[in-house]
Length: 381
Image 1 (tube, one colour):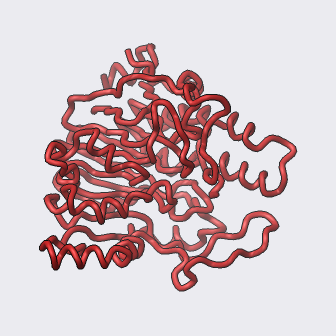
Image 2 (image 1 turned 180 degrees about the vertical axis):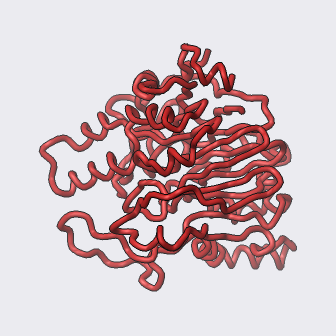
């Protein structure tokens, strides 16, 4: 049995068989050897979640085994859906043997991309997929590949603490959504796209992919600073011949909109939490799911990183960490409320905390199957 699985046979197992997270590497004190080594889990099912990268935050932390930037794939038959595109996703797609990987065309099996929010650690390699993708199978995918994610925030977040107002980056559009972000990537690589189209006859971006803002009801978008996590029910927004996708707002303030996703397939339901603190919206979205892939933070580590007494800046950073992420001690109860069969932990903050600690803490209040995720794990339904 994998060390990521609780040995107890549960009811569900029987039934279902700076952002503050960021300027420094998110590592626990001590050595990187705190992460247990094991072979990636494998699943020979038609539908499965593949954890491509499981590290939380934008820091370049070294763990053993290594955790790449956050990204997951939902595989349904010979096609897959990408959820977030953190650092190293291209390499992980090849290692996971997705698409026509043997011909160096892993993106050939890509059906759609879904972005939970626009923090850099979740989208850093989106530009690589869209630019280098020309030579890694994107032109052979079912195209144009849709890229779905949050829309424009609408206003800047407040300045935390007593710090002075910083200069505004890109004042003409300081909070772009997914559609505009994709368009900006195209403009950035326009020289390359035009050169390759004219010299090599490659397709141009509008033939390959298209960015889309997920449209939520206006009443939930009215106050991103005052009410960034309004209570709401899931909103369906995407459907093809293999999946139906719905979304809800989750708690990752000051980031807004921050989304979780539910994917319904013929074989079962998979939910990805995105980055979030405890969220009633997420519990509703995940009701009865076969798999819930959920982020976690070790509050013990956060307290060690920002020891008391804290400066106002350190207190703001500490509060962001513990309020906009889910303490591992709470995640089991969340999964239990949602009545999910299998809870899969990912987006680990820190990336090298001991597996045993994650396992013991996450088990609290949860009677289902528990997987302490690692890069390239496959969890089937």
